[in-house]
Length: 67
Length: 355
Image 1 (tube, rainbow over the protein chains, first blue to last red):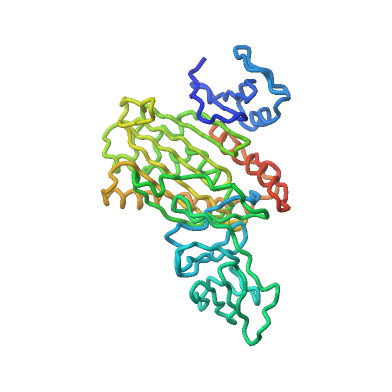
Image 2: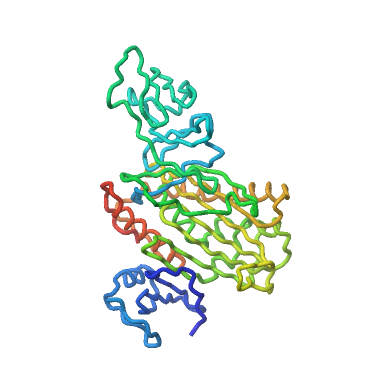
């Protein structure tokens, strides 16, 4: 796993998008903990803002999915 | 076209611009008259006389004490917008009143509230460096002949520095370094972070800080939609220690770049720009250099955005753009602005989400 930039914003509805170092891919992290990689930022935002559709928490994370 | 977001505070002027001379600014399509009362209070009201719509910022309109005397027929208005004199008759028509605007002076800006409800407890976002004794500030305002969304797009993606501002603030590393984007959708805040640990030092920082050689350069954008953009810029010699856990950061130079983004009309924008630094506070040469250099950079953006708007005006409806990784923050800002515009109380056209 590439090192991710530490969080700056602390609200409850914060979306994070990391440009995965050494790649052209973007890692989208929803406030519910769901993660998915994308190559297109438009598709990425469609997915993030589509929460909770198709949002499943990442296996390594313990946060619960917000209903 | 980017829809206006009402029920918001916007920068209408710097405090230094508002005095005993009448100042006219158009914010979100509303012509506003600004001046300062004799006791120093900034006031804002509609800038068109109720009689024949004469623009009240234009001579020979003048102040008589704290009252505005229209230069066309003498209609006279008090600071609360009420008309107190009309020519040739005793009766003052009931509708002879100028709309007034809530005003807050904060961080050297004069903010006006544009909306259909009162601001209540809502305050403008902060830019405390603007009038802090720990910083020296250079600032200015440039009008742009373009949709304010073009300026938001420009500022949210700093990779353009490498190309549009090469030789000033741009170096190859800016466009080549990945970004991290965070979005607080509820608060309407977009944060874009680009940390370059070993970068060329652009002339803007080499000449102002005196650093020779390569640098660690951090750019942390904090956009408070729709009206205020902050760029926290940290410059240190490459390899120098980072900030301490208590927030102190003695090995670095800090520059806080501030933009008040104020839509004037659908295709004109006020670009209030400022650069605050925490070093060489009393060095006039550094002040002059940063002012002139940053003004040049701002004008490079203004010229480019004016050209871009003209070009977009010739496009057919439904033209396509292509967004890539560097646009992640800009896309977030666009979507927040669309949502905020829909939520604001005045009827708005619902533009399709730009792609």
